Image 1: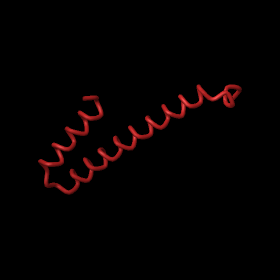
Image 2 (image 1 turned 90 degrees about the vertical axis):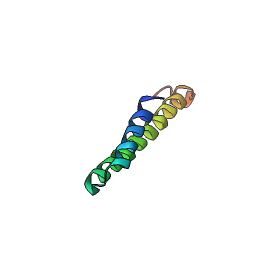
Image 3 (image 1 turned 30 degrees about the vertical axis):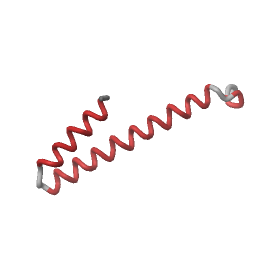
Image 4 (image 1 turned 60 degrees about the horizontal axis):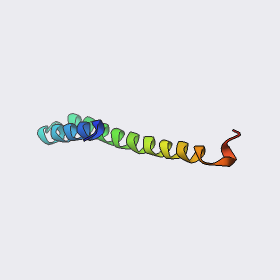
Length: 60
């Protein structure tokens, strides 16, 4: 289990235990942010790898 999965699991547990609307909204926003951040990191890693192997972009 990586760090992101652990954090998301903890947030999910917190979401299950609270009935407060504002807490639930904040927890959901944190979950969405972490998920989006992980997606963007993955995309950037793919872009970097693609650039490394692309002779067209070596001169940039």
